[in-house]
Length: 337
Ligand SMILES: *Cc1c(COP(=O)(O)O)cnc(C)c1O
Ligand code: SF4
Image 1 (tube, rainbow, N blue to C red):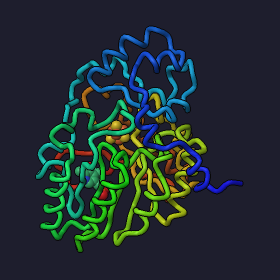
Image 2 (cartoon, protein in one colour):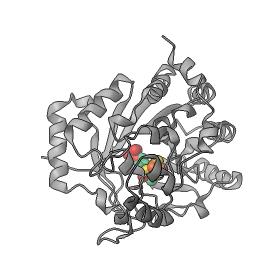
Image 3 (spheres, rainbow, N blue to C red):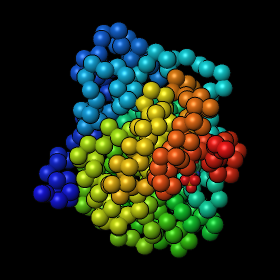
């Protein structure tokens, strides 16, 4: 048996793959043998929020299946062009909690740093699909402003690198950022929110793992996996490598109609992730972002699903069911009593 680390080293460079993302709706429709009727809507919807997916992710999708749960997360649809009541471009009120460019300070003790302006995949339900990345694109100078802000606020003991996806940054700028944060005494924990371990597992190079393992702060990695089918052998190795480097690894999912709104899918997901050293963290109800209404699961159904998870899983494998409420001081638990 080859070790997970060895397997990772044999893969092509993650940066090469990042340079070869699938971005052309025609290629996706053709490659996955979807009917031609999917093409025009995909082109129209991709104009509002581009198609973006790693080839590794596309390979996990069954051809000829428009309802494939992985495909639904990346294929631009006609439904995205609708404006639904109650859906907005900034449902979380992030624009108001943006004290310096690239920094979101909404909750006590932790700040979120928009470390990179994009992701390796554009998830169609993304709550930042309308985020103003242009004025929040980090340059060294903007990072410096964010770092100064953190330095001046001793109550901040945790910094969350988010995005976009912080792991699309190359190792060098990432190492610089980690070093800067580590130099601030009151920052105890570094949290990385990334979908790359799932959609581009090659990203977890030995060098990156070492950077996360060997610094003064406790490092927590929160991956974002919505469906057990997302976990192929490379993803499994990548997740195990996080565990082998002593990193606490958690998962958050978004509850999505037609993707994972089924208790057996969510039960399998928790169990599979646990085998790979990952504990569940959050199960998010969808944020009401314009263009994503077709992913919404009705509240009574959410509660039924969650009650099944509580019945079928040990407590530590049940994610916390939450939603974002504008102005709240934390994510808000959805009560299922
Ligand atoms: C979700 C979130 C956090 C982290 O919240 P936790 O409950 O600690 O995971 C921090 N800042 C912002 C802006 C967030 O959206
Ligand atoms: S990886 Fe996260 S931030 Fe990036 S598009 Fe997907 S949901 Fe949005």
